[in-house]
Image (cartoon, rainbow, N blue to C red; front, side, top):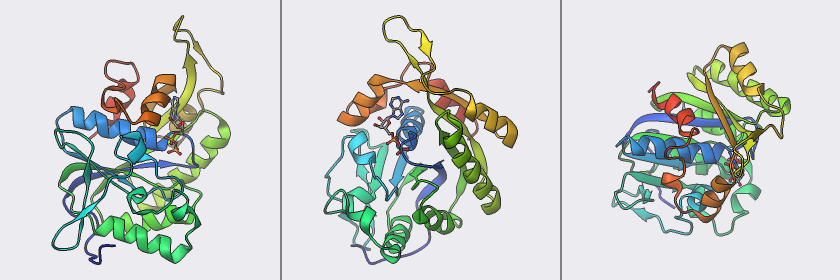
Length: 261
Ligand code: ADP
């Protein structure tokens, strides 16, 4: 493990946090899509996957199991996920012996790892997208406390449309307000299912919770992302993720974020 610690997130232009109240709502998927959208605009983008509860970014972008090199100064070198070297990744998953390792660590070890991930990476990017641990975990607070001194430009909150998930996001909004982090907006993910045959949208889960919450909290509603079987395939196989939304209505949601930057 690299021994050097220093200022938080050196070599990063602007940082965007991706938050959710709980796991499984599509936070990592949104992280990849924001990164892919910014990369498509010609920026150099990094993803920092510090979700100790389930670090899934390397699998999603097809760099699972890659080795992380170290600079002569002892900092970690991010792994490139594309030939053009415009998307680089550091994930807690790169440093685990088994997939369950980080989940069973005790608090101090988790905190030390989080600090190291925030201070010991040799980034060279315009934007860094941070996939944070879900809001119900202790490590979430550890990330948020440690990242305050970095150039954080805002947070994107991801929720599913049901009110339970929305309540969790509400807590996140309060947290952002208290820590002075600007909220770029809310994404309502898995909002309806668009039938591949007839293109009709069925609202399998409730719908509209994210939009109502955004209105109540006076933050931007970035839009709805429907359940998309192709998306699951892309993220499971780690292939074609950079093109997965090119030209689809969903890309608008992500462009709504980019317009604000
Ligand atoms: P989180 O980071 O919040 O734990 P993930 O991004 O890992 O959630 O998503 C959880 C699962 O849901 C993954 O299998 C992912 O492919 C799937 N998923 C996320 N968003 C969508 C969507 N819009 N349509 C279909 N599946 C999705």
